[in-house]
Image 1 (cartoon, one colour):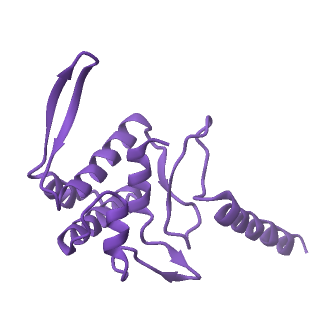
Image 2: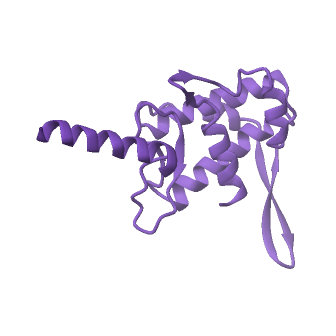
Length: 166
């Protein structure tokens, strides 16, 4: 998985439901350390900006909103500057230090949705709050984890069918 996909999923999946209780890595005590581990600075402003971007992406990916204003404001002062080398043209992100991580997340989301259309999705387990990027050939992955949500959902379906048959 590419580095930008890992960053995107890390931020999207920073609000998991654990034992039926919503959690939020961006509101937890260790949020600053977690953000620094992603390459950010860990400031309160950066954390707030990441939370707004994450929440907007959750709604967009789930198709419960088409409001992109939070994403647009995250990109307001950023720019990509071309740099030429013998290997070709590369693009260098220029953004304020507290804004760069949120900008990188928005750019990663845009790249994934462009290059892998319909492959970024929410886990099919409605009790889960995680996301996945489906790299399978048929594009039919439904769960964030087959070991967790996949098994759980298949067991529920099986139990439901058995009750119906009895």
